[in-house]
Image 1 (spheres, rainbow, N blue to C red):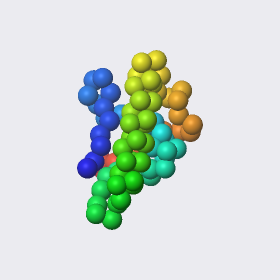
Image 2: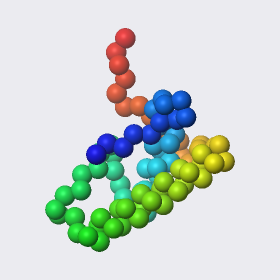
Image 3: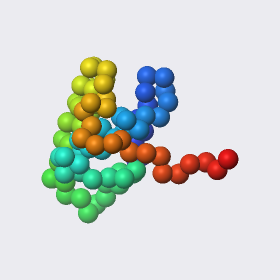
Image 4: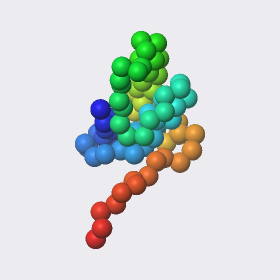
Length: 86
């Protein structure tokens, strides 16, 4: 699964993605772009991941409610890795 984060206009939001990743990492879940749950994950692993995502999504809601995502980031937001050549 590849989670996507969009602003209120439907445009991709690296700020929202950054906040979600930050909050997931704080709760022990590190990911780059995709999420691959497999049979090697225990029920405990899956429960921990779902709990981390729930808490991270609550932080996204808080950021959207206060209208300031960037103020909740501990560092700079992620940036686009691949850019189209012009």
